[in-house]
Length: 220
Image (tube, rainbow, N blue to C red):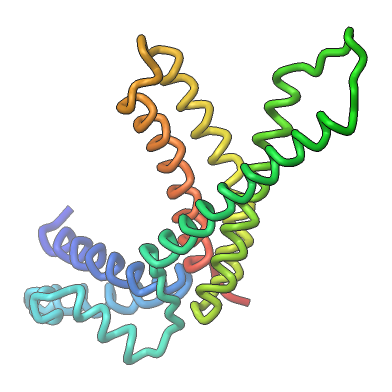
């Protein structure tokens, strides 16, 4: 590979990172990259340094191209989306725990099971935590749609978060249980914090992926 080709590839990679940050769709990024590559390779063929065309600042040059061509831009706003989704999830978690415990007490009082009947622990835990997880997902979707209703493609983000958050919570919980199993004293603050961090990381990754999926998906 020639030095000029390597330089062009490096400049295009820097430009593409800026286009991604601006929320430009993949289809539009490909068109911008093709046009920019043609210009840079033509400059290199004429003996010019491709970087000179970009004023030694590929990111700013890429941003200017995007503004001049008028391609669709969807701001990702990952921090804002993650913050609102987390707040919604925490509120929903509290509400879900209160409702689940209340329903448990209600069912215990309303139904007197025969002495020999035992509800499987896994079934009971699945119903309890599944109900809480449903509240969390609903809280995330509602928070995103209401608090960020003016953000472009936020409905797509909320819908995709509803698909991605449940398996992420399952995977994060399974990983936390695995960590719990290998610890000598799983009830120390450090161990509990580590397990909570694992579940939180899985949740945040799912929401971030939902937003990325929304802003990079082609329109129409």
